[in-house]
Length: 124
Ligand SMILES: [Zn+2]
Picture 1 (tube, rainbow, N blue to C red):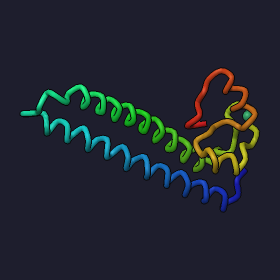
Picture 2 (tube, rainbow, N blue to C red; picture 1 turned 135 degrees about the vertical axis):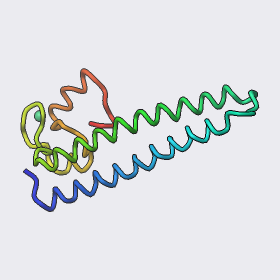
Picture 3 (cartoon, rainbow, N blue to C red; picture 1 turned 30 degrees about the horizontal axis):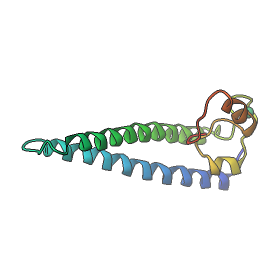
């Protein structure tokens, strides 16, 4: 179980991350709208380059949405007092690990075991 101070620190950390991702997602949405506005009368010369940039932005956006959902999940678990409980073995995850990887749902041992099956560097 985390102390009140630890919970608060972790919440601040998660909310900062959430704010950053939401800002990024909004700029991706802005990019999409600009693209639609420029559609009429556009020179087709640079179209392939623009398509490439656009799909990169969309992929980024998908990833951000995924991470935003992860953070919202973590905040819910924090609220419920379950954030430091490993979803595999129910052992405490540990405050230092949570600060380093606030969206993780696994303790170090379970994560290491699972990493042999899947690689999920960004979230776990
Ligand atoms: Zn575990």
